[in-house]
Length: 386
Image (tube, rainbow, N blue to C red; front, top):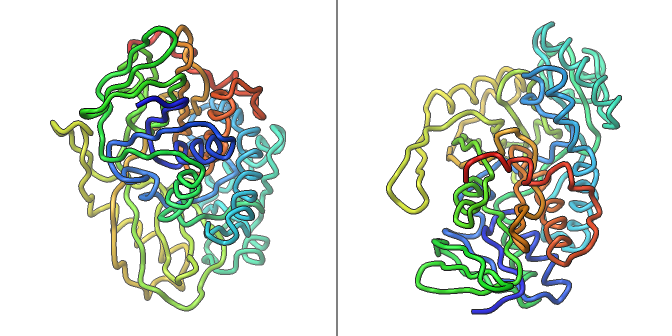
């Protein structure tokens, strides 16, 4: 099968790139080892988090400033989510009415104050809130909260459906999706790329590797190095209830994110670990619940939002998160491999998904990208082993 652009990975980044390319009339084929978004993009909380997360607060100030490099991507992602919401006329379920990272201790409060100041200097529109301001703006949180950092554009999308909507639109534009098919070989042949997947062969002018946690493995098939850190994370959801919260609520030092979606269910996420096992299957990993993570999320939820204490968790599940080892997105053509583009958002995955997909599409079209992606080049790993 011959195609102009072949995308490896049908998650949020891959489906976004397919949507944008198909809308431009480009011949696109998307390969995935499983279902649409089945390994990560439909298993996530779907938070839109435009301030820096607590992970950026764990290192030195220099490391924190490295994380601020995503500012332009953040701004672009905010625009793209709003455009998608309008373009898909309600088919993409999205809420953007603000989010807060809360502090329960003086140490966390001081860290958030410093974070907000550093972000403000870098160009983010994060605002520090004191105890009274948090209570006024986010009254659902406990009165034990001593401060918070606020971003007015934060919110969430329904991660269970977005990839399907993007893929449906891309297919309408002529894109082809080949699912449950493992890529086993990628090699340069003449001026094209030859890709082997299952018992099928594909020839493409351009290959976009948007494989999330599997980016390192897929890129290595072509001799390219994109070192990744892979972890298994836990999500839980409560029974439906009348409205008890309206904002995205996160925590300064604990892996916690909370929101009540349109169905009335409260989703508990934030990056608590799940068990990850290596398997001999082509995927290489499987996940299993970590009961302490489920219980910890329930406890933190009830403590931070007291009205949630009467709710019951009705389901928990696990997903895989793949992030570049330096926790900065990778977007760009692999040096020495013309036509091979890598696009991986990392731990900011869902937020930056459409922005990374659009940048990859522009690179495939040989256009100047709206966002300066030079700082995100895979060439920064040139010294690593594939």
